[in-house]
Length: 397
Image (cartoon, rainbow, N blue to C red; front, top):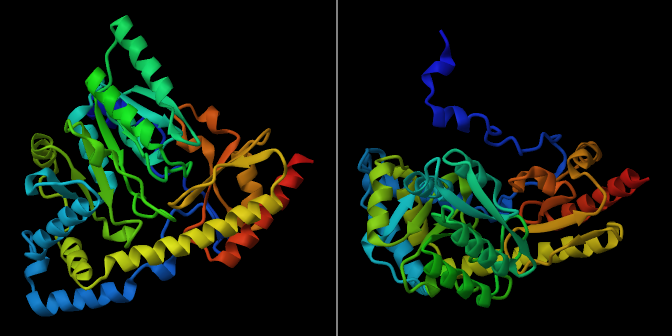
């Protein structure tokens, strides 16, 4: 049997891309994991989640374990609606869709707006899993670089003007992580946010705002694009993965009603009713504002430790952006192939993510690497950066 003959052309094309998760490095069990974009283990509320499960089953018996699930699912959606409102994004019930994490939200959006002829614009670099998703639907992906102030909107404007002048297909949407960007840690200025919305209106495209880290500011959380949007062009994707627990797979989309209807049409019942009910139970017993403060203070301390260690341990040919929140520090080491560096680093007991995985043209990321300060302890961060510095120095000899 020729198995390949059963795949349609679009699936065959998608299967030519790198497999999902190829970017995850193979590291020794005892290595310091500076590649892991996970919450700190002690900040994941495992005990509270255990109590939430017990409370849920005690109060509702088998109900949360059925297809329809618990009435608390509606309470979770209401919690999300109120949380959006706190952040300046007023949503009606039919303008919200709960999803199985942010990735399902991004995939659904790609599914309803992209085909092989559709154009999508992404930042360069960008979140590698979003890039993997878009490549499943279209080959028409255009990149715009990021600097210390986020997406370079001047270059975006030039690109759009050129495409329009040449009569080329205009983008269906722009995918952006404006706040505490993954991987660069940068934050788009408010002026540039306004420019993005102005360009979206002028050239008639949508904006997919990925705000997975948006409530993890060290001092303050910037306005979301969605809160500034008066034309319903922004599809906002939120997540509880970075502020509660990623394995719970709770995300959402906030968009105009017609788009939510279309997303729901294709989502069907591909969700996790028990996880949603458990999360709703947890949240009704949680002081979420206090939790966010604890997270932000912890991650700010860890970030400061990492930045001080980088200053001390890396050579002069290394540079990095200073994040104002989130999980990541983006490092450039001029003249060093970070993919080759990784094998030496893991032998020494520390891991990171090579920058190549965050670029459409992977060669552009050869000198970059992403470090995460969220997962490891402050002591391990300091030790890990020292090891990394030693490896870089030996690599340069």
